Image (tube, rainbow, N blue to C red):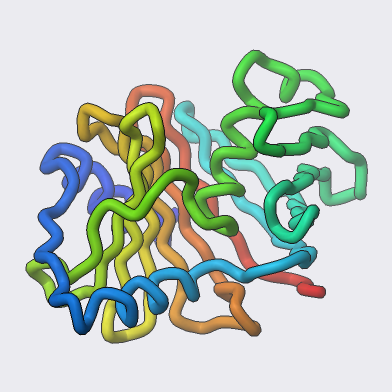
Length: 214
């Protein structure tokens, strides 16, 4: 909890302030900055395993193992949430056609749980859907890129000089949905540690430590 709390406070403050302004890159800078933003995600097909610690709205804690595989050249994914004993609690696939839940054990079979789990995974590990809307820098000097989908929802990626990256999902009205902080320390293209917060009355936080990659 002590490691998550400062990040949670920062997320709540940012949620109140809305999305940051991105100062547009010059034509000469644009493609290079966009390419740097895209290095946040691994291309192609891969598999990762994370140790996950969760903090729920009521303050209860949980510990799990998460496994995600990129399929179809990275255009699809399959994610499993497992107990520490290896029991598959939730198993879901995502493609351009939508979400398929293969397995969900109570109480994790509640409406929206698998969808939220996959949304977390997609935010951390996969490029956002939609088109590039803005590329440039923020007031704090970070490189920043913004993508918007057909519904008007958008995702911001920012790269700090330290190497830390933040990926933030916003609704079309500028309400923060999720924010992930990816550590500067990496194993290949994958962050060694990720902190994710979903703010709001039903908000939660996750700490993910990378265990395996292939």
